[in-house]
Length: 195
Image (cartoon, rainbow, N blue to C red; front, side, top):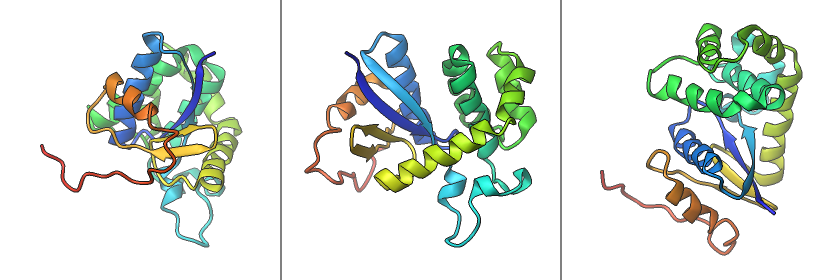
């Protein structure tokens, strides 16, 4: 039986990109994992207390990450055969090419690069379902696990925020997954990074 984990993402975070590349590579290489990819809005994480939630605002007030998350959710849920390609391409658009994922034309370009039907994906992204899913999945991560950023890895009742310093390192992923259930360790952080 595959190991069930979840991992959160926002396409703007370089550490999420590092982790998700490793997760996708591991899955494509046959890792015995059942992974749920959870959207987490960094825009929402920075909303001041008392202000309306991102998903209760008009699209022009969302910030820079919500549009890409809606497309990611739409593809994850309705076009799953294209999710890995879109997922990696969205991270690459932001971090390799410096594109602004808050612009829908950029996100549509990413969808097109994966071979998916851009108009069908856009229709689903704007159907309202992905926005409700974003609100529900983000809120559950915050309420249940006190999640505050990406990537957060979740297994059972344990959630761990992990920053991988290098891209696409399946060995780092395997090592980190081996520590998820070590509940006596709360924080382990290098004070300096040798670079």
